[in-house]
Length: 147
Image (cartoon, helix red, strand yellow):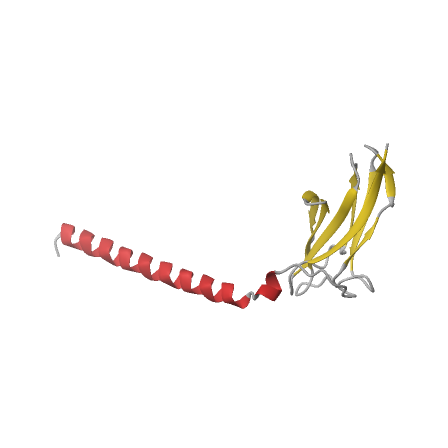
């Protein structure tokens, strides 16, 4: 077979393989997206003893003063930290703005995080914790900022 014909054949085969792999990848992504129902994607705002974050922080603080906010995952008992089921991250929001986030490793990290923050104005602190087996869970606490 002449070199140019062989080169064209190789190019055509490579193109077909690329198209096939692209179609398989798109199909796999579509199947995975269908697994995540709206209930799985929507943040849970109810109370669950093992998943709802618990926020420990003062009710009021001085403007600009540093203070600790501890978030533990689980209102009744701590969420497990196993290789197959753990909390991926804990994020802290002031109203709608994320101000801190910590990613956790299974087995080696407990689902308890302490953030040190300062605020200029009062509002609501919201903690979001996302475990591996469900959508994220949310809890909020009002905080007053004194002059």
